[in-house]
Length: 375
Image 1: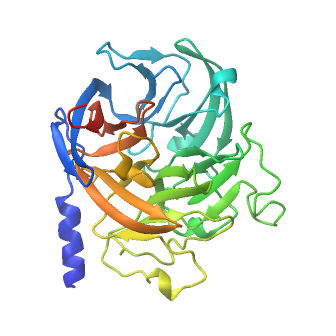
Image 2 (image 1 turned 45 degrees about the vertical axis):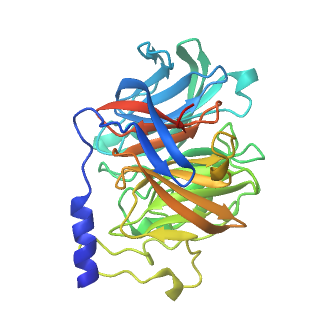
């Protein structure tokens, strides 16, 4: 009972997305020393994801359905035309954005989004188009999660490209629980696709009766953080648990991560869920968090501006209002710290300058840059 009360107190203390302007801190003390926090841009409506173009400009998604080109010179963002219609309710909307590995030659941009379906339903979808100036052309939907589900929760998701060029897309279980264990749907799965949306022949469940060939791993809850570790080529995700039990997972081909059969957290009604070690057939987390960190956005740091962070994952944290830095060596967590920024952080990216950029989770969101104090 004491554990439940502590978890409930922690959950109640988590702030909702603030409606006023972000309260930017000027600096934060970290294990790497003092870090300066610089405002790069503001007035970004409900930002969700960003990525850097080769020329240093940023592509930023806005949940209501807008894709923006943002510069760091104080100019207003430019709206990119040609984006898809989205289901902009609850956790749905225009979500992740990623550049094709061959963007320099093909100009291709990938977008994930909540796609409206029949009778008010929605599903996570993935599409691609060519970025031509400030417009998208040749838009094509490559994948749509099945089945469509009513409700506004647990769309996931993040896009990551493996070293072989295949595309990973993380998919939430749409708050449906048990389907995450069923290989016959896409709920609560990590999928792997060719860049044209077709299914790679070496995916683990290709040809199995009753299984979807796109599935790479399963038994996930809601995954809004994903990145490739360039040292190993492996996909890592940070996954939202229920009441407690957020997880950092190294994703293995064909593995089952246990949701909702096991979890390091509890159900919202206070009933228990067996801990992962009680069911060794499920893959367990590299680390887990209770109270939760509410992970959203994730980057691997291998630049030079913060040499102390080399080999670390930087995870955006909504409930801890900052970044969670997790150092990993040989697949094991060896160090961790929280960088308190005073606002819910939705996304994190390492810029071409080696500095760290974050999006605040606000109605009028901002982009901040973290750099060594004195730069």
